[in-house]
Image 1 (tube, each protein chain N blue to C red):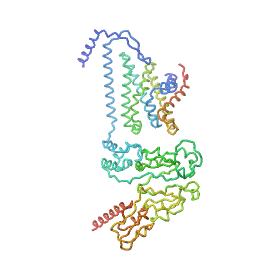
Image 2: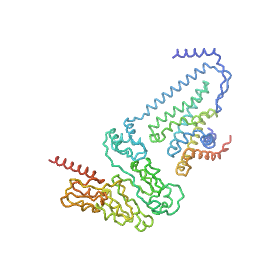
Image 3: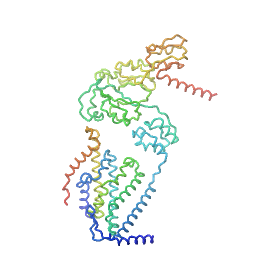
Image 4: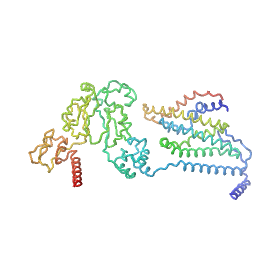
Length: 392
Length: 195
């Protein structure tokens, strides 16, 4: 160390011969404590500044290294891996404040399910389950449904609202400017809140959900001040799109497509899935088989059938001629004699799928639910067979 | 201990010569963090803490090392070095002690070291020849003024979200206009302190 110091001083001493040791110090701004000097000793000045800067950097280096060691946060590498797999929409569907918090929780806490990140979908749930060593339960896809069909053409406004164009603000003005107090106000809060841009407002003032983009994160459900949005499983495509608890005549006064609680839907339902309570019809999702009959019979068209397509039924070759479907068909589209293969009149068939549900041997194909019913029945048979072999 | 002088310094730094509205310093953090109230509050507390510690350390280093060795010309570099080190240390400490706030502040925590105010205060301490306690008071006053600015701006900007702003003014342009108006209002404090 001493030799180094000696060498440095010698080198700097040489500079004295190079007549640059006479300096006038410039004024540094902000009125600093620096006075102009006539001469300055360059050699010791350079020496001191070098030592000082090097010394200070060393001290800071040590302080930072010490802080890094002492306050080290041990991050499990799996947290990073899980974080990469998540959707990072910051929607809060998992119930945690942020995506990183969920990644931490799912790695550390054995009780947290790996399939809570709904926007990321099934694939991500499987990957997270792999990384954390947990089991992934496959949740059915859910979509947001708007339980109101009363746009400007169907339901009038009570007064002219001139305020902030947001449903949360409009609802403060006497419950909103819509004549039906249970209906959607149409100022677009849901569309603004959606992190996936899945909701757009139609020209008539009703939100439209894009099912491709909707992930069922429930942000719109909690943001809607009128509680008009419900998040339901994708398979439940027939819903009573109205929340009005007013009596029938009052509903007719304010909205052309509201539920008047006439009870037609409850009468025609072949599965007894519809109940009228509180002047509103409700479809029980457990019992409903999405046949769409109630939607066709509703006088105000308050029930929305959101199934994308209803292919007509076809009788397959394993038909045993039991005539059960014949009796169940609501439009009498099936014809056939006992013990002979039946036939379906394609013109009359409405694609409700009731025949597929009632057929004891799954001889109906082509309807929207035929494939699903066949798979379910096959699973049940396999389960029963396994139980029988176990018992034996 | 002259409490009068200290009080005067604090009022001057926070109201009369507010660093954001009178000096127009520290604007990038001001606009970046004032979108939400919770980040604004978190940032103002962190900033005041870092400001006071760095002002104290800078004063000590200046008085006891740089003046005797005649190295005042290095003060800008040295002060920035001290601030950068302190911000990095607070970053590491915060990650362990308050992780929720750490994630919310995100990049803006590291940006404290690029904040003009954090260099201005030690330089002004040197220029005004404050004593140790006075420079601490000045740093505290500047932190207070910055917090005031952030909180006012955050509460206005949260309401601006819902307002009917013209399309090309949405976001930052409107925020600048509002800041200008608040600065205009803050000139009402001028002359509060007799120099």
